[in-house]
Length: 421
Image (cartoon, rainbow, N blue to C red; front, top):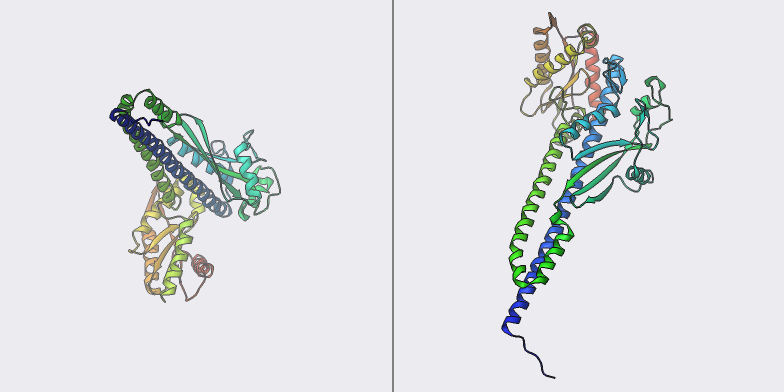
């Protein structure tokens, strides 16, 4: 049998085909890797957004329970019909996340249950994905659940869900007919609902598998035509990848922005209760391990409820914001201030003596008392009381903050407008 030799032209064509095939395979592989990277980032962004919604809900729950106890306020799902009420925590979460969704239409939040409450004549039942997530959470199979759907050649949808776990403070409202909710005998630790985040990720049709099939078809037609198509295809793929990277980076920036917002009090710009608890514990651990103390001052605006009742909630909000600005003017480099309740604030002063901490507290008290606040046609004098404490070696967070609270009560019972500690 005579072996046939390949001509130089045939060899060149074969080399070209192999080269083009390698380029096509590399292009397809890079497209798949780029899609996977963007998808993983999108899932992570969904996780961050879900954590933001969870922290906002929990922080608002703690704040509203404190406000209800202090001011005997009502809770409602419709503040237009009852302007003297405050949102239910779940209603506030929906309001906050709906505002975010209006700004970024490709992000959708949801709170659903298999036994939902009736609000305004409607019930928000869980969909198939949310029911699957509920089942897995109740079986303790996972702490989160997510799914990716290819809705079309141009749209990929990422679903992410986390459980909503009943807390002790939740049961006070959910099992009390006083608030107009159906009594369902919920207990702390129950998983009765899920919080879901849906991200719509637009994709270019050229990134689908059919794009690769088109390249292979061009290669089969002719080597010359295939050679002409390689460069434009690569350039288009790079452009698409850049766009996907921009989208992923944009979502990442939004997620980081939300993380900052979740530890900031919206009304005053100070840190919120969640940040205060975590940071103070870190300060106690770090400075305590080095034999140093931490100072804490807790402030409470005197007769705040009376001001609210006399001049209205707008006046109360103005006082809260004004005090937030004033308190920041008395901070040193390593101090931080937080709003830890309705009209309650705190300053953390590390590595300072009792005399230094007391001096800061008294300056704040004196500055407030020396100013008149203009509310409409009225000039109102406001005072504030303060209680302080200096940490002791090995002292627990709860014991430390309780001492500051006790001194605050002493200041209140001693005539207000003073600092005790």
